Length: 174
Ligand code: ATP
Ligand code: MG
Image (tube, rainbow, N blue to C red):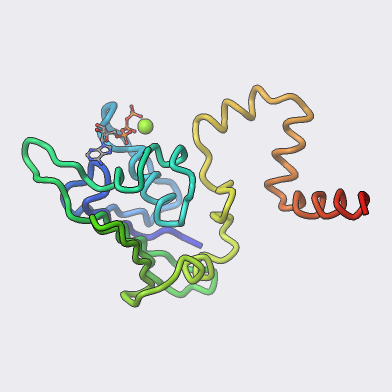
């Protein structure tokens, strides 16, 4: 899967409709502290259904909606759209919208969809539950300072064998 383009509007610090071209093997985002670099990664995690508020650095669901500034009034909704090329070369646009009344709507190519359908589109891109394709600074620190036992747990989890280990443990107890 390739990320081609992203559109953010009303999400965190993105007051105005912002389009980012991601169609390159390497994309660098540079800017001063607090200018919204990490908010872009938060937007991708949020769109892909991240359930942990800590991961997207919010305390409440509505915190992702732009809260207003001197120049711009608060947004009525947060929108994130991601244009991707899937593993079959098909171009799709997936999106998520949160309105001030707390309603969430997922979109695929402008049609209403469920998070489940979004997962189907992104398939095995490894951006599922554990998000091993998005590595945060914290995770790098964790990896570098992990003991060999902790490293093994992380690797087993990333490789997707943890479920089988859990099943084995249950079976052995029976
Ligand atoms: P650093 O270089 O320090 O990591 P950064 O470029 O990653 O900075 P972010 O953490 O992405 O910066 O952005 C933080 C900014 O986003 C803060 O100024 C914060 O006020 C703003 N922000 C976060 N949520 C909202 C919101 N709901 N409405 C308005 N602004 C928001
Ligand atoms: Mg940052």
